[in-house]
Amino acid sequence: MKLVVFQPPGGDPRPGLMTDRGVVDLSFLTGHGAAAQQAMLRIIDEFEDLRPTLENVAAEVEAMPVDAVRLRPPIPRPGKILACIANYWEHAQREPRPLNMFLKNPDAVVGPGDTIMLPEFTEPWCFMHEAELAIVIKGPAKRVARENWRSAVFGYTAMIDVSARGDGRFTWPKGPPASWLGKSFDTFAPIGPCIVTADEITEPNDLLVRFWNDGQLRHNYSTDDMEHPVPELIEFATTVMTMHSGDLIACGTNHEGLGMLQDGERVEIEIERIGRMSLTVADPLKRQWEKGVYMGPNSTNPDAVRRNRPGAGS
Image 1 (cartoon, rainbow, N blue to C red):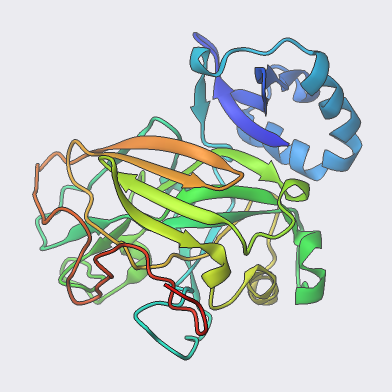
Image 2 (image 1 turned 90 degrees about the horizontal axis):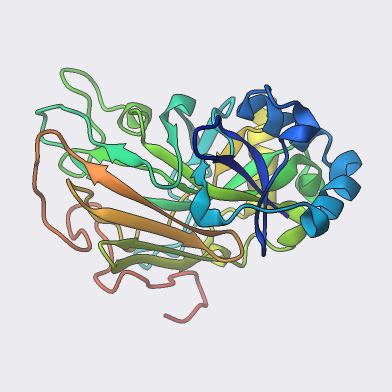
């Protein structure tokens, strides 16, 4: 199933079910006055009990055309976003890097059709896109062994990990390097367009991730190129902390294909079996950087998509 948060004309955001016929309003399940965030958390927690009802409404309840509503982030305010650092074979490396993660600001979440707002800092920064698969947690999940990883996964969505970089580094004005700060500005965590339930994706490490900037394909990689696959991510994260329903784990990106974001651009992310969403970019300072695939110190392949997993072809 594909679960969404949508906003009808003149109405408040509410939970919905994306079907071939359009979007079905699910607010009757949680009360019409319930906030979309709480409604989605209830659906996650009670999904197995709600499944027969959801299957029934998907087939029989009147649906609204998708173009008649506005899709919002499917989890409006995750409790936490735990994001992998790198986590893909790239640059012809032959040894996996240690698994590592950082916390990204949950208030940075925006959704389909929204605007990524670049911050008004005069430091020599640039702002980059990182297209990623994100895991939606079913919690509470603590010390989940990798062989039991499915017990902690409710579903999957797409995320753009917008990242501020300066001269190939994460920087902070008048302070030390700090990656989470450069990734946590408001609007720097677009997610969507929906949550696909885990039963629809039996193998999360076999999905195509693509990203376009003004129609130019930049990211184009498979999740089977992860250095540390999804079961290992679940085990690692839940060893460190308790993960709750609606929390996200962003699985990292293949940096082959990174590029700058700048004022007026239209960006699109698409993950196989999840869907596609677009956003715009706005920069009050109207800064300009090189266009296309970045070739600087952290650099990437100019073809945007080389699969450098040991033993894989290009």
